[in-house]
Amino acid sequence: MDSAALEPSLYTVKAVFILDNDGNRLLSKYYDPELYPSMKEQKNFEMNVFNKTHKADNEISFLEGMTIVYKSSIDLFFYVAGSAQENELMLMAVLNCLFESLSQMLRKNVEKRTLLDNMDGVFLVVDEIIDGGVILESDPQQVIEKVNYRADDNPLSEQSVAQHITEKLALTSNVLQSAKEQIKWSILK
Image (cartoon, rainbow, N blue to C red):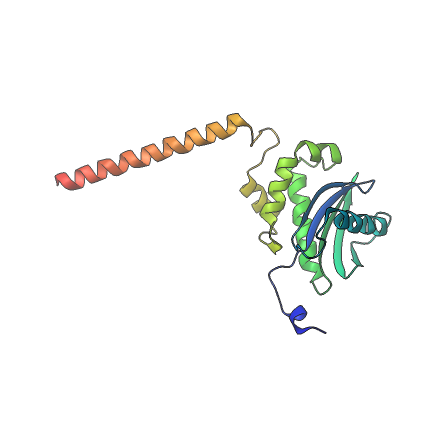
């Protein structure tokens, strides 16, 4: 066995993907460019995983030298894949964090239509949990706070971005004014 394969690594997640109940891709992120370099190979892998797992009652599967944990909800299937030596509990923590974060963001309405309507937030959640295959966060509350996503708001709309920039500029202006006053008084003393 290759000794490099057994060494611990921060790069624990190889892929995250969400499929609908027909096995069609809704979201996917692959973190190992050598694993499945083409879209066709990725979709074939996802279809193989879906065919093996969509009728099963398990939470874990081993396929094509990968450890895959998964969960289903109404008409969605959530998958997190790691290497064959990867700790299943770590992968399951990522999967649970992803599912719970999306559940909170979508107000417990984790289904295809709602997920598609909030896809910008879904990508933000995935990016807060995993970066380049490294697990950054496994607490759904922390993820939601970092994403600061509310279903009532449209966080990426032009109006909210403009409002956010205006607020930051006003804050910066206040800080600069305060600094000017402090410098002025320190010179006058």
